[in-house]
Length: 226
Ligand code: CA
Image (cartoon, rainbow, N blue to C red; front, side):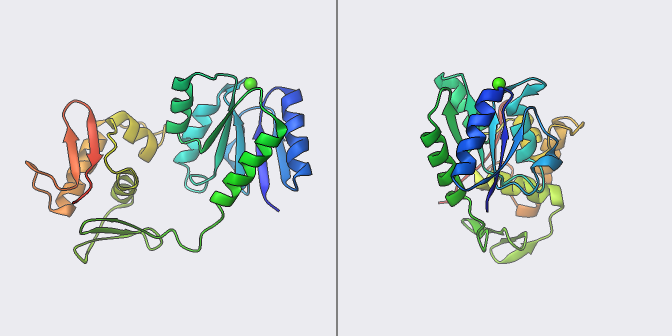
């Protein structure tokens, strides 16, 4: 039976959501405020309110996305804010779906079921391929034109993050947040150093990088090889 954590401070909403999810055959854990990461281990899905007594659900979402065990936990955000900008912010922060209050119980249950289906554990995470660059996500192994690259854990995480979002520009701050995590104390130079190291591994021509592009004054992005 799939287990769903519901983080919602409004008691009435929390109980209604819990009631309908249980009736849909799911095991439910009800939480009135931001939980420790440990409270979410073993959950298959998180229903997360945006505004909570001790902070923003988005802050928790960002921590989850860089947490080693929870990074793939599907998250359905609940919010009273219906603005398009908020919606985009929620999705860009790593929410998988989004529901604006007030919502119907039927819609909530349908969205939860759809997310659970989408995130059913896969036998294999598969492979990211970009031209001659190949990342085996199960073995955590990177090869370039068939030659294995010897990367540190952080170099690997940074490369995988950029390779998962090809063409998308990330600022140094965003990369620190998403790859190193919000608790990391180092500065943005750390990102530059790791990009330099990755480029060395990839044999990049600095004046015309094939994979790791610098966008001056803004950040970095992974180019898609033709
Ligand atoms: Ca709230």
